[in-house]
Image 1 (cartoon, rainbow, N blue to C red):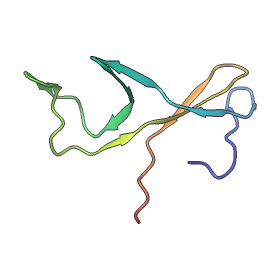
Image 2 (image 1 turned 90 degrees about the vertical axis):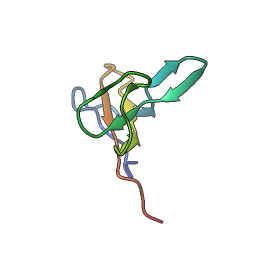
Image 3 (image 1 turned 180 degrees about the horizontal axis):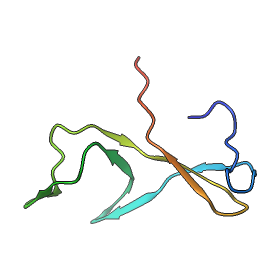
Length: 77
């Protein structure tokens, strides 16, 4: 995502890339950002049909633990 290393806004240290893990039934997945407010679904928990969703990329400061997350716009190829 960033061309240059991200600096922590809290302490100024260089941040390290990672991701937030979602544990589900029988799987481990990367968190996603979904547009709009969550709408309940009887069968699936939350309705997703027709909503944009993007992977969430997260950086962590190894010095103070601050997290900064982004859902970048996908590159058009």
